Image 1 (spheres, rainbow, N blue to C red):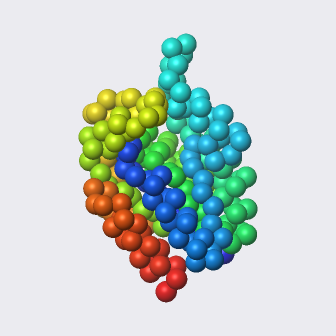
Image 2: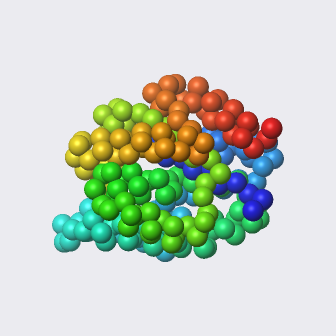
Length: 209
């Protein structure tokens, strides 16, 4: 495929949304055709799934396995409807979360069986891996404090225990160690303009050299 899939990962409040917007503007200024998407919620079906997954309800509790399956369903639809067609069209896709989020959140965070998670990921992506994954590494207490200091109401995942979020962070740390060529770590505590410059250099070195 002529396009590139660039994924942004990290715990809650790590700064993904800000850096995705900056990267998008930069690529557009360079004359590159770029789009922004997210998981869950990158398609019309995905938006409904996102609401189910992130809206905390007093009427029902989503089981851990159901949560995993809904994320897999969102990903399968996202790839079929958006990612593959846009990559074939030569687009630079900036995606807020992908398979490593499922491993970190449902695997490390929830403690679900990794073999099942990997199997579902493989089934959903059908061989479509990211060309680059940028992990914005920030301490969970700092990230959650950023979220709580904002105007948005915390979603179901953001309201999880600090222990859960620490397990998720440990998941990202181990994934980055296991896949150093695939996942590039950036210190999310740095000034946002410094992070922006680092991301530009990483993308340039990877794709424009």
